[in-house]
Image (cartoon, rainbow, N blue to C red; front, side):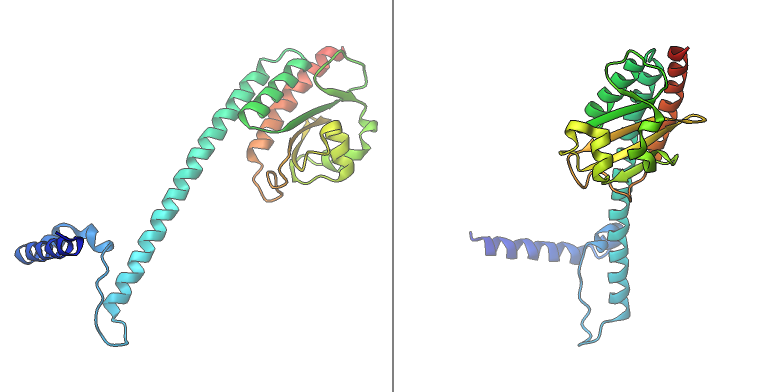
Length: 228
């Protein structure tokens, strides 16, 4: 039997069933949202047909919007868990090197960053391996970035990029820079990406600010301990 004949038989069976059960759609209202039943009125469109079309479009838009909200919620939950792990690691840090390791592991592993840089200002030489210490006066190249309490996202200037990321500056195309402030400017944390569009000036910075606040407090405590 051909596919056409099978289709005709199936349609006739459906038609016969509906004829015998006229209340079918009353008991299955949701099916009406998916059906397209033209209302013949010549070139004009009936009010009922227009209302049905509008309601169907609104339903589709609401469904898509709900799906987007669910995706955003899942993404935020994941970001929160990653941030929590980073904060707990920072709270356990006892030295400046511990801070640098916790930051690097979290950002490179959990957040898939391509490069990180932690710069702290101090007037005394300290024994560290995984971060850069310098005088505040030697950081004029990044004065615009540390002159605010707010994170900066996007493309850095060539001078800023070179100062922060040094040998990797050629590959870093966008970055997030978080000033570290605890009464005074302590330095900065920079997260670099080889993707020019990974960080942009329009993205939210709530989590970045939160990380900066925690890191500032931990770094301030350890700096004062090691400087005295």
